Length: 370
Image 1: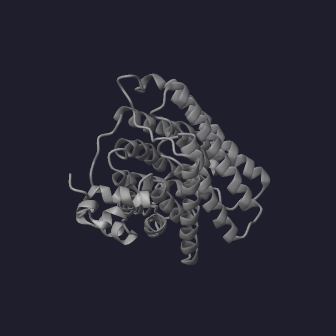
Image 2: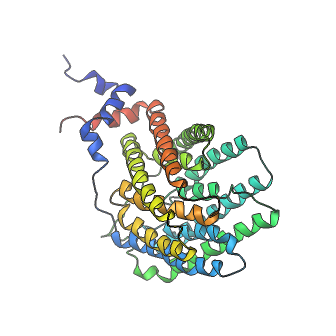
Image 3: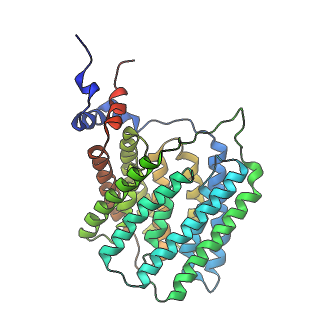
C-alpha cells in the first residue's frame, strides 16, 4: 500500500496556495542570498549612475530640458548584461537600447495619435508580454522587461507633435549610447566569466514555454491595468509592472516571494519618496538622489529583491516627477503603493490559477521531508 501523500502526487491549486502561505514559506521572502558577483552588480549600478550624472545636467542646462526624463530612461540600459562576456555585454546593452527607444517611440506615437484610453491599456499589456519575450529570448538578464515597460508607461504622457515624438526617441537613444560607451570604457573593471568563475544564467526556455509565459503576462497586466484604470489611477502602468514582476519568474514559489517582496519594498520605498517629494526638491537634488539610489539598488537587489524595491520605488517616482513636476508630487507615493499591491496580487492569483501540473509538483516537492 502506497504511503505517498495524494496531494503530492497530484497537488491541487488550493493545496499550493496553502503551502505558499505557510509561515516557513513566507519567511523565505525575507531571506538574503549571496550575490553571484557583487562587483559586477555594483559596477552596473555605477555605470548607470555615472550616465545619469553626465547626461541629466547637460539636458537640464540645454534647450532640451523638457526631455530630461527620457534622458534618464536611456541611462538604464547600462544595467543589462552584467554577467556576460565582453562581446555579449556589448550586444545586450545595444539591444536593450533599441528596446528602450522602441518603447518610447511606440507609446509616444500612440499618445500623439490620440488613441482611446482602453486601447492605450491594451498596448501597455501587449508591451509587457512582448518585451518579456524579447528579454528572455535575448538572454538580457536582470533587470529584465520591467525597464522597457516603465519607459512605455512614461511615454504615454501627452505629446504635442510628431517632432516631439522623434525628440523623445532621440533623447533616449543618445543617452543609451552614452551608457553603452561608458560600459565599454569601464569594462576592465568587471569580472568576466571563465572556467573558474561561472555566473548564473537562466536555462533557455523552449519556445512554447516563452509564448505561454508571455500570454500569461499580457493577461495579468491587462487585468491589473483595467482595475487600476477603473479605480481612477493616474499611472496604471505601475499595476502592470507589479503583475509583470511576479509573473516573469520561472517557478511558482519564486513568483510568490517576488510578490511579497515587491509589496513590502514598495510600501517602504514610497514612504521614503513621499518624505523627499514633500520637500519640493530641486532638479539638482533629484539628479543627486537618482545617482545615489541607482547605485544603492544594484548593491542590494541581488541579495533580496524586496530590499532593492526600497530604493527602486523612490527612484521611479523621482523620474516621474522629472517628467511632469507640475502634475506629479507627493500624491504619487500612495498611488504607487496601491498600484503595486494590486498588480502583485493579480500576478500571484493568476500564477496559481494558470499554473501547470509541473508548476504545482515543483512547489509540492519543496515541502517533502529531506
